Image 1 (cartoon, protein in one colour):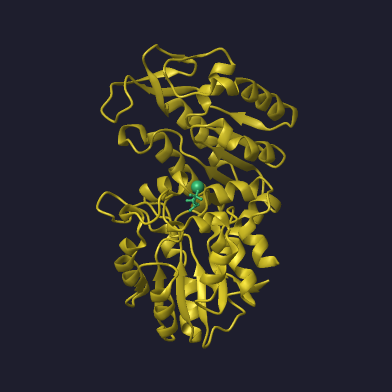
Image 2: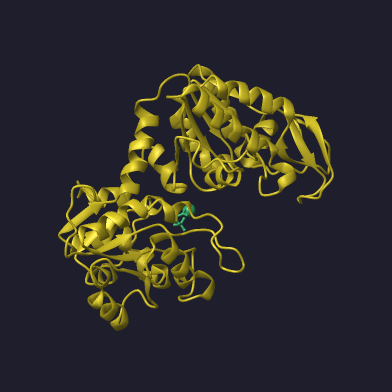
Amino acid sequence: MQTVANFNFAGKKALVRVDFNVPLNERYEITDDTRIKATIPTIQKILKDGGSVILMSHLGRPKDGPTEKYSLKHLVTPLSIVFGIKVKFAPDCIGEEAAQLASELQAGEILLLENLRFYKEEEKGDEEFAKKLASLGNVWVNDAFGTAHRAHASTAVMGKFLQDRVSGYVMQAEIDNAKKILEFADRPFTAIMGGSKISDKILIIEQLLDKVDNLIIGGGMTYTFSLAEGGKIGKSISEPDKVDLAKSLLEKAKAKGVNLYMPVDNVVADDFSNSANRQTVNRGEIPDGWEGLDIGPKTIELFQKVVSESKTILWNGPMGVFEFPNFAKGTNAIADAVVKATEENGAFSLIGGGDSAAAINNAGYGDRVSYVSTGGGALLEYMEGKVLPGVAALEA
Ligand code: 3PG
Ligand code: MG
């Protein structure tokens, strides 16, 4: 596979697929720029070699073509600041204007194309569309690990219309770090799984049961496990149709000798809001009309102890509704413990993307763990053992 490190971009126009699907607030300001900052080394290398960069990304899931909310024009100024040069913008990712801007692009310059998903052809993996994109430059660089689980025109198809297909630094780092966890983990190896749905995490949990010593489960999905044990969960989020699945997972963990840890207490609320009334109750004893929104203090102590004794830590998914400061304590406490294990015991810690990356960054700990993944679904699918189309296209 060709990599950014060993490819000379002098005189080349590199079409770089990045995952700039970043969260924006109502003023279109970026609230977490992890994915953007991660691409700096790839882009700098190309520019330094004497190449130019054409950035391609999606933003959100636009349904009906161009939509203000999903326009990548909102990223032009922040990108210019991050890369230290004025980034040019093509208000349509294909067509005459894009072709003109691309052909005029000089070595050392960056051009950003408008949201690829304004064309339905992108998600369909349409060959004609991919060919049009490919015609704008002469090297395909895929650095969009976060979108590598999609077989879209820009992530998997356009490479075939260009002779040179190059894997970016983000792509490489993501795969190296995931492999470190899956194949070379120092023990004890602890996986911390959070989030609200068992159905989202079941495949990865099953894979991890063959690899980990400890499995900590927190977050909304634990209420389904409570149901499976006949506990009372009030109006907490749950998947009643996944109760059997929860039971079989408990049995599998036992059969494989994995130490399974679940909350022993919860902070519950009488409303889904930051200002709701709160109380702490034992697991499985949530009163009617109340819902669990965080793990409780005894759980924090239990989970922190397990984390502190670990040499490898994989964390994916928050412990509660961390977007509400009053219910972020559990998630922040786990972040604390992961940082401590990393800094004081030399543990290797990998934070899965999406919510967990946002949580670790919210806590101000982004650079105090071993690696924060830029992938959400992509990381999960990679760890589930699936072939990612974006990676396969580079290897082809
Ligand atoms: C993500 O954030 O999950 C990636 O950018 C992929 O986006 P998608 O889930 O809308 O395909
Ligand atoms: Mg996704």
